[in-house]
Length: 420
Ligand code: EPU
Image 1 (cartoon, rainbow, N blue to C red):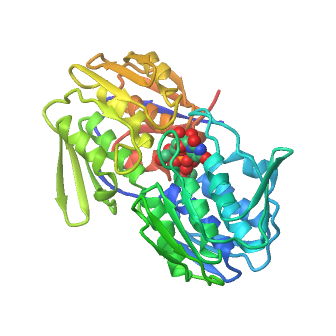
Image 2: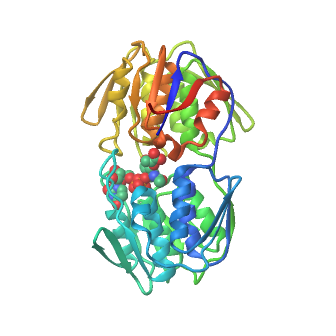
Image 3: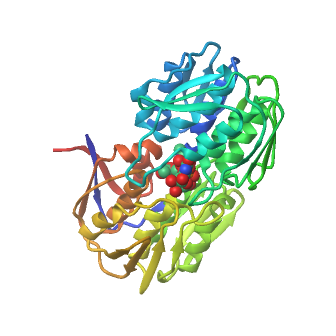
């Protein structure tokens, strides 16, 4: 198992190109199951989650080719049973349920378990698909869904913590081939949902309103092959912006869409970080000092939960006390105890993390627990004095394309080393 060995204290400087969005490409890959014709997806990041999803599509009978950021999928022949162990590995795989059901009238997909950031139920996915007429049972760890014909319906997808991103994707995909009109209320507004809707429309679907809380889908008889370029990863862009500020550096982000992470940019600005926009390039540089700010995670267009851990590292650099409130996932503070090993002063009270900024960080061996926590620990390692060894970085490889190479080009002293 690889680790990252980081020698901290060097500001990041230079240019970085943002990769395609993991959370856009995963449901888009699932959407290719809705047609027997070939689909071509561009700007696909080379991530282990993309590899897993490709393996899942292959296990369902699709032909999958991935080369140079271009993914070709042809699901001419399909079986409706997903490989239990492959699907269990990755929560994002639940979004094959809607497409399989719509295309084959049945699906058997293993139930994704909880994960370290929270319990992560799928009740809203199932509620939405049931509204379209699916009969769903849980049998031996599988979601077993049947619907000889799906029928359009009004579906409300708001839950305890707001809308559901993949639940919206699942129901929207199933509804493309349903008979009649589906209206999803309290739909997730994330840019990844809009990107999926754009791909589905390119396949011949009739979707309007994606990006707003009300999405209308007029069912069609069939979808056809299409080409699509995935949006840039707003969380990767936010991660590099935060890393620039935390290391007192200056990074030019190429290919990012600042409007997709304006809540992060707004908080960074409030904390004293400076930005310069030059056409498609956004340059991020630290101001004179970092100020304490309070951050609450929210559904889009609020501050994303996926950037919470990284932001917390920056706030350990601020003068004063910041409060970070996590409103989406109940246990997404796994990075806090690891940051404490580096000397951060953070207390957790319910959904709040109280950060007393300004304590010096010094390197230590630390352990990554999930994808975004790993990114936060890497930023902390770049800031800390001395050497930090980040273990279990397979989490990082799930969602950041070549992160160590990108950081190295920005001047970071970072090496991938085997765990001893
Ligand atoms: N929820 C329910 N019932 C459901 C589904 C969700 O109660 O049926 C709750 C969840 O427990 C959570 C909230 O609703 O409290 C939001 O969860 P959501 O369904 O939106 O999350 P998701 O779709 O499973 C995606 C991303 C996550 C990201 C969240 C929130 C993918 C593959 N995953 O998950 O990304 O944190 O939306 O924005 O798109 C990551 O990239 O590190 C990551 C975890």
